[in-house]
Length: 111
Image (cartoon, rainbow, N blue to C red; front, side):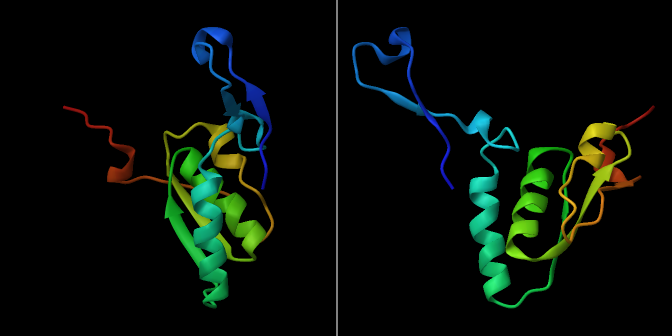
């Protein structure tokens, strides 16, 4: 899957012919799908049916995105303090919405 290239600003390129890949132009706005897609494609080829992960951000989004394209069902778990956008922005093809869980995953300690 290609992402657009952009010529680097001259201050960064320092006289070189330098190009940057614009991962921010991908629908997820992050590069994490590049790692998730081949792993979940391999899982699909091995006959695995589902994936479960825990994430409050890009990892969960990339795993859900790649899983929906690889044909693997799955579930993303996130802490209850995770923002609503993150919990509701997962692709829907074969994926349940992100579930908020109360656990040590929230990393919130009160004394």
